[in-house]
Length: 79
Image (cartoon, rainbow, N blue to C red):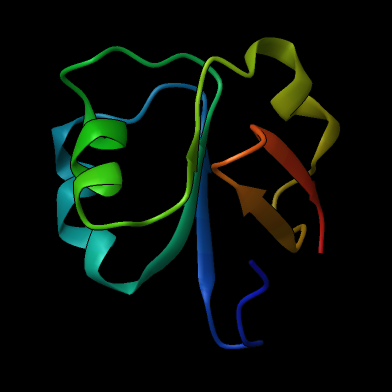
């Protein structure tokens, strides 16, 4: 699903527990490496679209790139 222009997609190589504070404003989460006990699980519980285990594919998007995260298909695309 697309989100409005004021929404934020969080993207990181491997987020830590400190990311949990940002989840209430997140429209999506894209993670290069993820584990079951990281913020990706908390995001999914809040019905925030999550795609993890992207590996080096996340490097295709420079900082500041507008992203769309589709948690159903596992796709992260430029928004």
